[in-house]
Amino acid sequence: MKEIKPEKAEQAQQKPEIRAPEAASQSMEDRLHRQISETEKLEAVLSVLSGKKKAEEVCRDLHVSKEGFYKWMRLAMAAMKESLKPVGRGRKSKQTPEEKSQLKSLEKANKQLEKEKKHVETLYRIAKTLIEWQEEARLQRSSKKKDDSARS
Image (tube, rainbow, N blue to C red; front, side, top):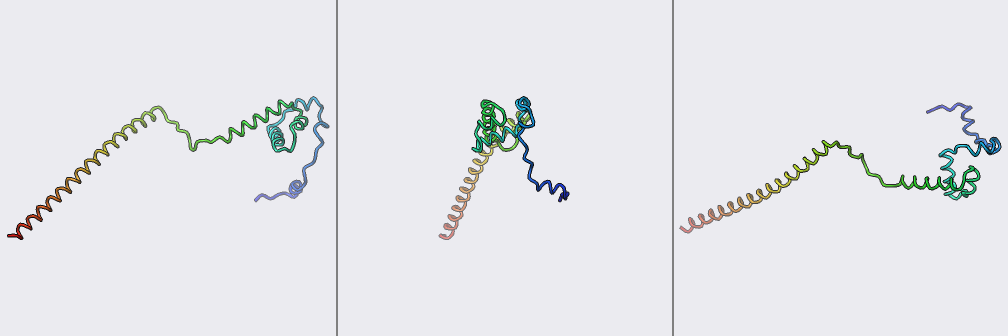
């Protein structure tokens, strides 16, 4: 476990400083040309969606047009919608043409083997039935001989 130095522990317990608005430290022109980070845009969109702020207020605070802000909203909603689409499980197959050809060949051979298996199963059932009939006929002849020898 990391040991926290006393000076850092004090800093962690202190509340963050509340700074004066950027307006006080920057000229109007600097604020107008400032890049707004993705995090700031996300926070702005979420604050409007959650009802904490109105769009007009966010636009005024960040010095952006309503059109620009609503563009962020559309992009954020589209990204959320895209992220919620169902995705396939597992990896996509990256078969080479040779592997695809081999797979088709194996599938064809498998179908042929399935047909042959059914044919062999049919022959087996026929042979089993014939053996059962032969056994029944032998038993009948055997019991007929016993009956004939008992009569004599």
